[in-house]
Length: 161
Image 1 (cartoon, rainbow, N blue to C red):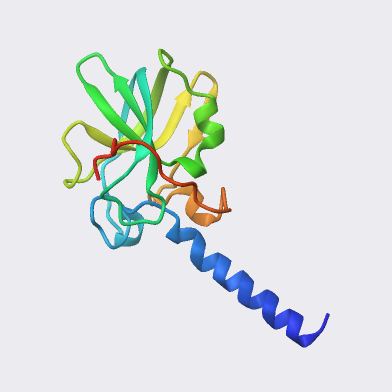
Image 2 (cartoon, rainbow, N blue to C red):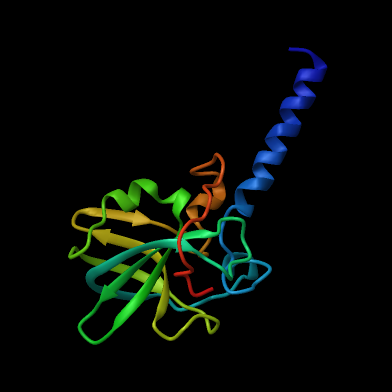
């Protein structure tokens, strides 16, 4: 391999490593996500039935992925909007979730989201567990999962950030 090819390969690898975190959604007007801010947010374990699966444009996100996936979950004492993440990164997981399905999940919230809104860390549906964020709340797709181009956002603004 020539010296030029090695330099080009190293440069492309560097750009790919930088671009992966940029694809994550950063929330309601934040310049960086909760993992980069080093926030130690309490994680709450909850469960309920999926009432709706919403996919749509996230108008207030500061990340590059402006189309997000949410579950509207009916719990015994409340209905919540559970943000999963950008649609492009969760295609496989979304295919395995359905309206009426009972799920349990770990979630967190910040003061910047509405009172009925949470962000999923992990979801358990039947015998399947979907880890969406690690222990520092960094999204799994921020490590390069799901690469490729971002889809064009469609639909109304269903996201709250």
